[in-house]
Length: 177
Image: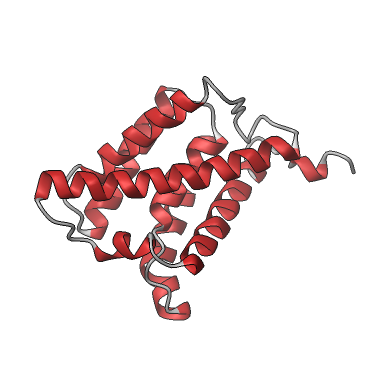
């Protein structure tokens, strides 16, 4: 089921990021693609298939959004490496396997930090490889508090989407019903 949900969620992120949010809500600074890529780190166990999915989706998103080649892929790989390194210090059981609401909350908070790391790495890599920051959307993402709220809502949505439909599992708050 994971291999079906990841492309569907990615297409939702691309459509919302490029069409729905700018046209309907006039929100142009949230990058749902990066939020989705971080959410698959939050939800699924860290393995080779996750890395392959991340590389493919980051490359496709970079091509779709007209970003410099490889910057989004490398930013995602470095974020995944940082996520894996953080797993040595904090219990980061994937959200698809957890039943604890506290662990899910911790994963969402760490996911927000992962999103900020991915955004920062993207800006640094673009500056290093291409000499200037060409994408103003990513630069604006780091400025306004309302964008952080939108990013957190996006992370919660994608985490809910990927955990709710994975293997028919119940979410932590449904465990006690």
